[in-house]
Amino acid sequence: MTVHFLTLGDLPLAAHQKVFDRAVSLKARRKRGERDTTLAGRTLVLIFEKASTRTRLSFEAAIGQLGGQAITLSTTDSQLARGESWADTARVISGYADAVMIRTFADARLQEFAKASRVPVINGLTDGGHPVQLLADLFTIRERLGSIEGRAVAWVGDGASNMARSWIEAARIFGFDLRICAPAGYRPQPAELHERAKLVETPAQAVEGADVVTTDVWTSMGQEKESAQRRQAFAEYCVDSALLSKAKRTTIVLHCLPAHRGEEISSDVLDGPQSAAWDEAENRMHVQKALLEKLILAPTT
Ligand code: CP
Ligand code: NVA
View 1 (cartoon, rainbow, N blue to C red):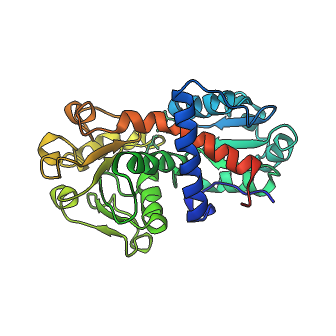
View 2 (tube, rainbow, N blue to C red):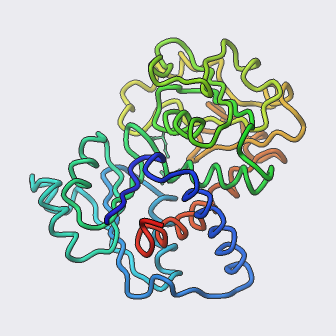
């Protein structure tokens, strides 16, 4: 059976926990200089319709370090640019690859591909979510704070972004409290909110007592034309040292990166002692190794 990873909910909580446990061991093995070959002879195809640094490199490094191979395709220089359908492309790639990661705009495109794919498809960011980033974020929380369940997480920024939407999904699955603070016009749809994911009025209310403070760019890829208007709307939503001083001394700060320093986060916070953003970026690779092993080798366990 082919199991895709299009949203966090595609894996049950127990499977997520196993992925995290395996990522702990893979990370430790790499730090000790040990080598793994669990995906020897396997091929991961990566398709990008938006820019990427971390997602591309962490997936390429992950499969390579496990003995497999990555092939990266851009939509601008493949036949996708000339109108070949995503479904037809999926049928063809299924004959070459053991898994496919896609970064695109509309979720419908990813779903069309996944429906026609005979190999696991991974969401590498869409307009609707960024689940592989959340795996690294949650793993980093576990690594730094010991547990995820019951934690208080403050989201300050664009509440309708792909990252915010994946955080909302994560709060339900992993059982933590997400306080979302976003300006009017940039809040999640009320139907998306749930018992564990609630709106708060001010950034200060969001971060007070929070275990984790997180944010993301005000203008996501594809929204560039709105950037001036967004800069204005989000002006009071910067995670800076004044805001962070209202949290706890043990609060950690996450950012999926790339950051717009001085906009959604100040440099002193991003580079400061409470920032876990750099470990978070590294953890992308360790967790994705475990995810690839899970989807390719043991999809149903
Ligand atoms: N966080 C993240 O997905 O980064 P990239 O856009 O560089 O892949
Ligand atoms: N919300 C951002 C995340 C980048 C990793 C974007 O979609 O551009």
